[in-house]
Amino acid sequence: MLKIPFIFCCILPVILGVPLTKDEYELNEVLDVAFDDFDSPLFRNPPTPDELIRQEGYTAETHEVVTEDGYILQVHRIAGSPKHPASKNKPVVLLQHGLLDCSASWIFTGPQKSLAFILADWGYDVWTGNSRGSRYSRKHKYLATSNPDYWSFSWHEIGVYDLPAMIDYALNHTKQKKLFYVGHSQGGTAFFVMASERPEYQQKIQASFNFAPAVFMSRAKNVLMRMLAPHVNNLMDLVDLIGIYEFKPSGKLIQSLGKKMCHDDAILQPFCKIIIFLFDGFDKEEFNMTLLPTIAQYDPAGASTMQLAHYAQLMNSGKFRKYDHGLIGNLNKYGKSQPPDYHLDNIKIPVYLYYSSNDVMVHTEDLHKLYKLLPNAQKFLVPFLLFSHLDFLFGKHVDTWVYNKVLNLMERHKN
Image (tube, rainbow, N blue to C red; front, side, top):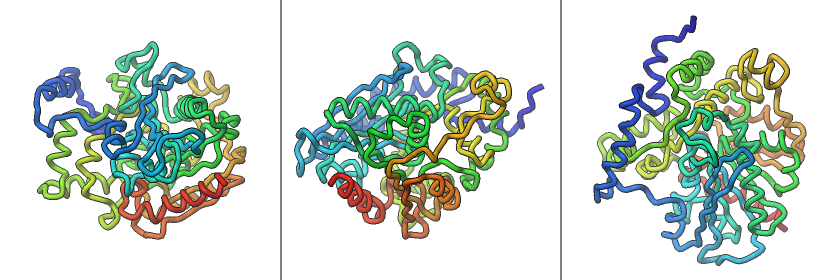
């Protein structure tokens, strides 16, 4: 008989961001339609990444990339900036977001702080990817998102299929042979999967820059993940039982509440801060609170439940290995009782690791473990003690402490 703690039955729908009953599950869709009739800025859809890019006077393009297994991914490109107009033969950079995130997070902080804009101003051809199941990549050649088969993926498939497809597309489109790769959190996870499972793609990457890469996670201090990880198998049984396979992107209701509750003058802004700090580490000095309403417009951006379950498995095992399908599932898929490890020691290209002391997802010792296994890696500790997981995107001084170092290294590799 399936034994699942009652408390998890109660909190799982909240964790997934979707209601428990079918009628409640459909409420977000009803509200989205209803809010479409409102002319209030509170209920309007947030600008798309390409709209954000154009608003700042940069050249924007939106491309659709089809993976080998049929997922249709949207990629947003900054082809030119006021300082460096669009032209041929620019060095190419692919930026890849983290879990429950999307390409907008590389963009909406604006030209002074956004890595995407900063790179464009330095003369780079910037491509920002969106992994399968996230806000801007929810299409498939044959499967609808209502089909459970659509959600049968973790970040393993993002590394094996999504990244290669986006890399090939960007290189073919620009007629370049190599690109620079930048990943945040899960963007780093997916890179190490790809470099291990599809080593031929190492030849297409000039260098890889990884911000808080979630690879080894046995020492992660994230409160929610720590609570759920020991029960991940039971929770996934429950997910299959009730048929909820995704973390749904925020709809207009959540977006409008975020606008109303999280702005600088809102009485409830401290509640928004608590949520951020609970999941990503306490850093009231460096985290830009003014961005909270904007973050709420785009995040959470959607993911499969298997993506989080795979991270929970890493926390439990202390290893960086493929998805654990259970004894029978592993025997069928891998021919052995345990899932195989990824071969990090086969990654020969230059890899740069950026980490911080206050990151509740990527502990410094876990980062050091990753560093020791990579033959051609360098690591950089952010000098501010309270710098946290999301500060790599939204920190007030991230340009000084992280992005400038990245640019200097890219220029060195480029020359």
